[in-house]
Image 1 (spheres, protein in one colour):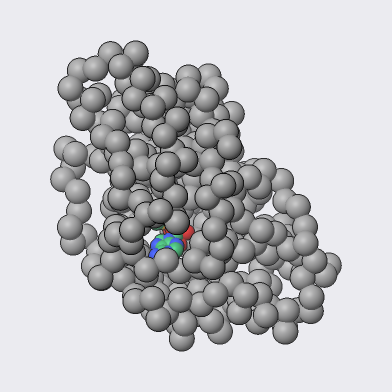
Image 2: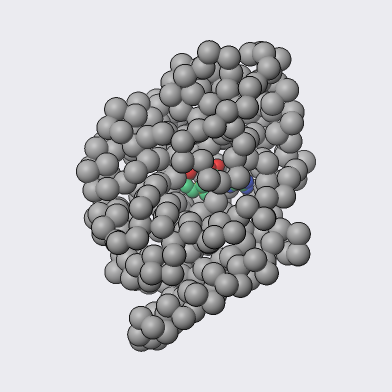
Amino acid sequence: MRIDYLRVSVTDRCNLRCIYCNPLGDCGLIQRDEILTFEEIHRIVGLFAECGISKARLTGGEPLVRKNIVALVEKLAAIAGIRKLALTTNGVLLEPVAAELKAAGLSRVNVSVDSAERGNYQRITGFDFLEKVIRGIYKAIEVGLTPVRINTVVLRGINEQDVAALAQLSVEMPIAVRFIEYCPTNNSTKPGTFFVPNSQVRRSIESRFGPLAATVVPNANGPAVYFRIKGAAGAIGFISGRTTVFCHLCNRLRLTSDGKVRPCLYSAHHYDVKELVRGGADDEAVRDLLEKIISEKSNYTKLNSPAVEFSMRNVGG
Ligand code: SAM
């Protein structure tokens, strides 16, 4: 597998308190001076591009809470070798900045929405922001940050009843609505009993809309498997990280907001790139480490990684 995709967590701060991701809010945040600066992120992504990374995605925490994020997008989009630069966001701050992000060189956005019902959205995220998010999605489509994808984590007894309404969005809009299996990450988030397998999510969609037909969506190179509701403008995707193994297809590395590169979401193994960069290493030395990370990536997989606690907020999902 060619390793050509880097997810970059630009902050561990978030403006939502999702019960499965960030229930304790600002508790345990990384010290600000430990977070990579824009210059450091630009340098590391540039050197990664020289090692074959051609797609990057900004994530977090919530990437849009990072001050001057548009300036970072502009710097990263200008790196020779980065052909696609995307962003994963909760969408709360998207509407006012979507056009600027597009102009700065962002290709597209994924927006996390766990319920299309205002009250339940607030129960899950802690805030009454659903309308803002929906406006952000429309704006992203309008300015061409497309194809837009929606990410939904389904939790037992929390938003199972919202699946049909979210799937309905794919009927009306040219977007892919993707259901992500919940991955319990640490003691503060919901326990494993809240997990709902995607086979069940699919059954509930099919019982409402009829059989799903397999489909292909543009720029889909990740673990999602796509289907279409008959006559729909968009698609339904399933990302089944708990019930399937897609390590053999995994082309991604993750740069955490405090400068560690993780070769596998499920493994605690990491390489401290920030230590090298802040220690004054020249480009050749940093590039040597990045090449080593790429060459060793396949040693770390879901199957050979003992379960460890981690924070999705820092690693970036
Ligand atoms: N704030 C942004 C957002 O809401 O999309 C980006 C960061 S968030 C950590 C990235 C993705 O990880 C989101 O789609 C979120 O739903 C997903 N995520 C967070 N915690 C998760 C968990 N425990 N299991 C599965 N997905 C999770």
